[in-house]
Image 1 (cartoon, helix red, strand yellow):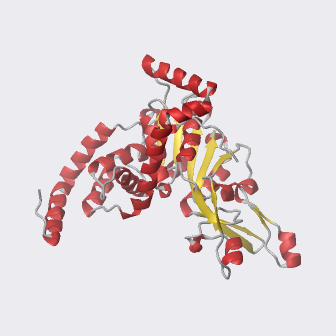
Image 2 (cartoon, rainbow, N blue to C red):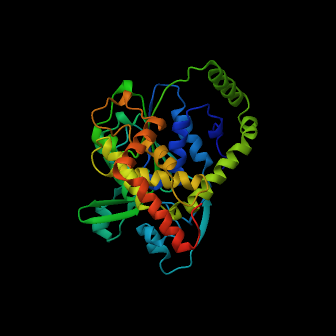
Image 3 (cartoon, rainbow, N blue to C red):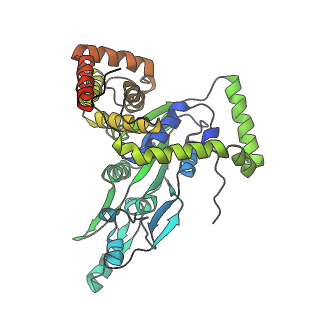
Length: 367
């Protein structure tokens, strides 16, 4: 089946912070998704769809309703275990899923349903997959997430955090993998999310329409060119798309190998603490975001720059006592605060000691 023409991700004008948040989640879906807040017509949904088109095709178990990964039997659905535990594996290639969740979605539509009557009568578990099944190993896009029922949003965020969907009814249960990049978009003018739900989104980005006339002209020209000749326009941007897609794929392969030091952890903890952020979720999000950024840049360990760029996405919606619209934290502001924190905690000296110890262990002199 031919792919529907999608506006190229790399052709989106400006909005660099939004694009960075999406790309880092593509590199490391464990980060936990991104909430994009902004007025109408700021390329929110365009960016989400374009991201999915960048991602490579996936190899799945043949016939799997849940896009089960042949290389991860520990994450297979109950169906896949029943079919392949004692049989040779059969695989097939599929496009990375992009699933659009309607605002009217109910709990059963999201998590799926168990046929209790059939289970009682025949002893067979019959599960009708929901949206979480379709989205596994892909992108789950929720437009106007602030208009969804809070309980449904909770279900989505739980599944994204756990990586598994478990449905239990009348003592009968069914489980399947549920790993996806969660992208929520919303217009703050139409209502907000509760603070508890805001915190569950790993990254949050506030975007606005571009004011520079040159940027606005570029948007008009590119959009018209795409509408007149979608395939021709995509061909013009194919090289840029391929390069970014390859960078994401390479970074995905090595993100879990990116190292960090105790100095880095102290820096992250001190930065988060200095901004009066509740809980510990932000610390983990920043670390994972920093690893993803380092992997994307081709480095083997994280730096202060990686920490700052991840914190810029992870902290604004978590800073206690700041109105969201006024809580955009710039990289320069975070860099200054990180320097202060490191000075107060003696983190810089700790880093020097760690570098000296590493040099002694490897036999390499500190440059």
